Image (tube, rainbow, N blue to C red; front, side):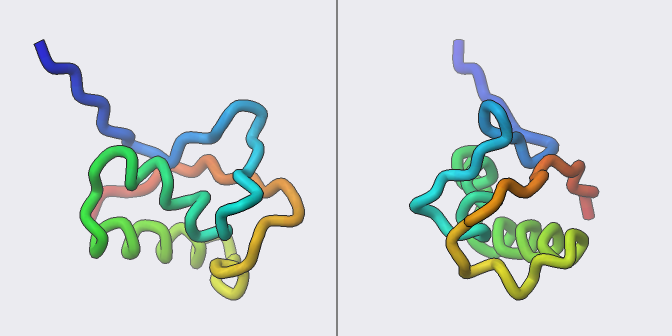
Length: 76
C-alpha cells in the first residue's frame, strides 16, 4: 500500500523556525518541493504567497527573523 501526502497549505516546521541556510523563497518552497510540485507550479505558488505577505523583495535573502509562513494557498 502506497501512502501519499499532498499538502493543501504550506506547512510550518516545528516552532515556526526557518531553515537558516535557505533563502526566504526556499523556506516557503520546501514543503511544496517535498510534495512533488512541478517547478512552474511551485514558483507560481511561492511568488503568490510572497506577494500576499508583501515579502517580494525579501525572497532571495537569508532569514534573519521569524516570519509567520502558514497560509492556506487557494487552488487555481
